[in-house]
Image 1 (cartoon, rainbow, N blue to C red):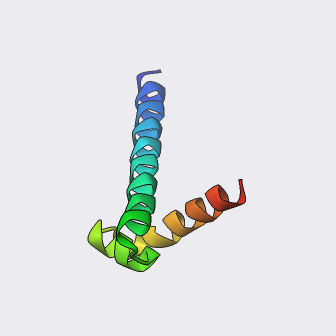
Image 2: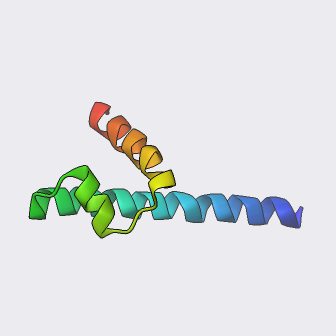
Image 3: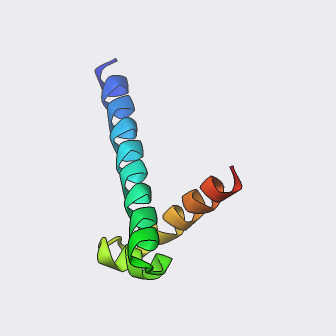
Length: 63
């Protein structure tokens, strides 16, 4: 049972990080006029995570 709680906690932490980074990307684009790539460069988002953020941003735009 302890492992289940830890897994749920880690999932929540990851979701919180994603939410914060998405908000940061959008703020940089809006306030500084940077492209998505430039915003992700500024935030030092690793290349292997960028497609995930692009997908999440696309879902937000569709909503």
